Amino acid sequence: MESGEADGGGLVVAGGQAAVGANGSVVFQIYRDGTLVADSGPMTVGQPAKRLTADLTGGTELRLVATDGGNGNNSDHADWGGPLSTCR
Ligand SMILES: [Ca+2]
Image (cartoon, rainbow, N blue to C red; front, side, top):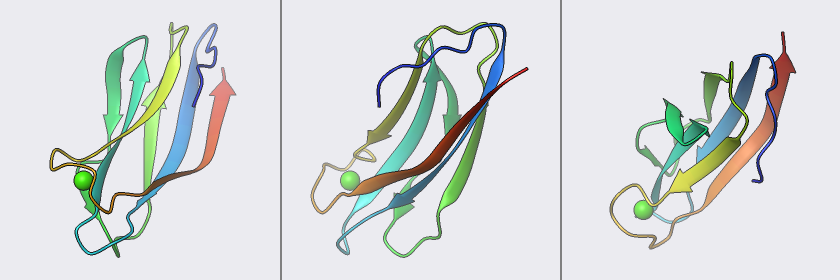
């Protein structure tokens, strides 16, 4: 996902769900200006979606990242659902 502005402070809430295949595993992360501000931890197939919340105050760039969970990308599939940002 491309960057978004959080001028003057903001909050992002996003859900993530993994993965296709028995061996699939991913990690969802939110970065504010290159700093990790939320991390789902490892997620595997069959787990319910997790909601991540991050404070974007003072940030100028938001990145939503899905990694391979540290074990390669075999069978990995990651979906971000309904990212929502708010300004205060
Ligand atoms: Ca993986």
